[in-house]
Amino acid sequence: MSVTSSPRVRCTPPAMLALLIAGFCLGLFASVGLPGLDRTLLSSSEPMTESTPSDPWAVARRALERREFASAREHLLPLAEDGHAGAQQALARLYGEGLGGDRSHARAYQWFQRAAEQGEAEAQLALAALYAHGYGVNRDLARAAFWSTRAQAQIDAR
Picture 1 (cartoon, rainbow, N blue to C red):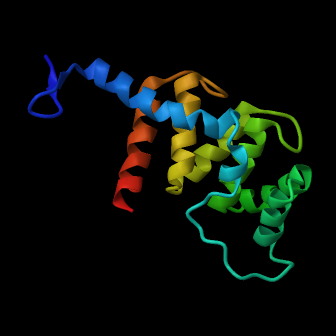
Picture 2: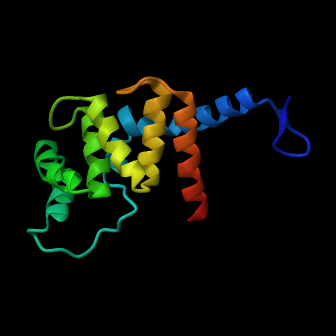
């Protein structure tokens, strides 16, 4: 049995899943452990707003911009624990890269999961990569496909 994706192209479901995961993972893996982290550390669907110097999110973002990763972790952790999706995503990236402290794919997974559940498309893509490669979590291609598809739907809706 095959699934038709267009009038001329036929692809079996396992092949479609493999193509979906492969396509997303090429870009996704970079978000959890390859060069390119600097441009994605601050990415969030939440815009940078005018803030006071004592605003914890602004302080954390400034620490990230200055590459003061240990300080950024300190400022991001309480925000992430309070449910701030942008802070959860940034903290996950720091753990995934080992910036500002020990590298922990398990902690990166934990924070990406929380941000992904709040609808952060980039966190969903990173979570898909963790599942696809088995970093910090058991390898699970079905979950990788789920999070990739969910993120792509949000991106397409923008």
